[in-house]
Image (cartoon, rainbow, N blue to C red):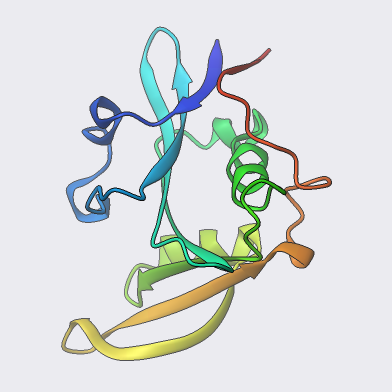
Length: 150
């Protein structure tokens, strides 16, 4: 498998499931793990940038990208010195156990639930990861425009 990490472009977004596609806005940035022959294996989009934080959205089409360094690329970008962000935030529906487990597994910590946001009885789970607690970075490693992993 020949995997590269590239900035996300609109053609990559069509691979994300319909219920996971955030709206692209002027401050949206992204990283795509791309199999050169097969297309996107995972996409992370970041938006709603504030002075200290950014909201993060992730789609993992093939978990192998985690071993190829996808999370290091994503959090290296979010927490780089150039970015200056200290907190990554995610919002997930309370009835999606798979995404809640993944979020906890990568180190996001639940900070609150907002009742009935997605539907009656389905809360929004808000989780954060602080830069100082992120195990996916070393010295705020910067995302490079294109990087191959063997």
